[in-house]
Amino acid sequence: MSFFDPSTDPTLRQQILTYVASELMTDSERARLLGLPEGCRIRERAKIICPERFQCGKQVWIGEGAILDAQGGLSVGDFTQIGLNVMVWSHTSHFQALRGETGLSREDIIYTPTSIGERCFIAGPSVIMPGVSIGNSVFIPPMSVVKESLPDGTVFQDDQREISRLKLKIENIERQVEQLLANNPRA
Image (tube, rainbow, N blue to C red; front, top):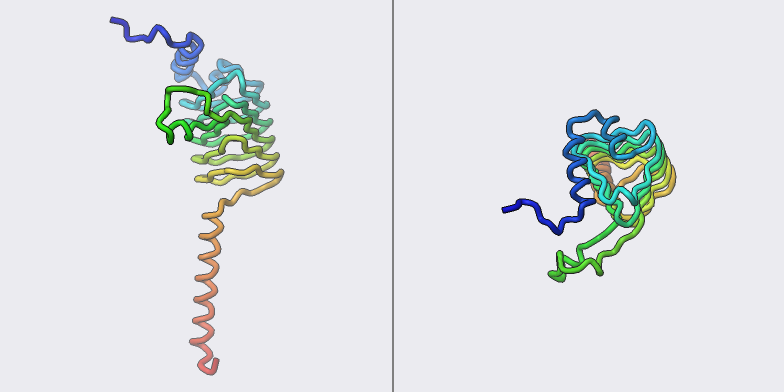
């Protein structure tokens, strides 16, 4: 009895074996094995899905456990850092799952290019959704979900963070008003 599925794409089998072998390498050795450009480093358990559609700049750092999905096309600019457990997507298959068609067909999957500019910092764990274009010198804090494209120089704040920040400001102002009223009985 064979444990291996004879219908498995040989390219996929080679990719699996490459990642297993790369566990024993340094970050720089792993990057060279995966064909990344000069000065790049990639940590353990990071994966590039569909590496033939991945364009990577120089001096890129990819953190441990990051998943870079290049099925729809993915580019990352020079000097960018992608943190631990960051997920960058260039396809979506949720419509398949919602219709109960997972694994039956690939025709309804939407593939769309995703890009990350130069000198960006994406802290993990964060998610970059399919089709997003991130400009140069963008900072994305931990636990972010980026659903829309970001221009150069952006410090990303998702809506929930902004709401939480505003609630704290309101609470602080309310405390200050209470203190003023307590100190000034005529008011």
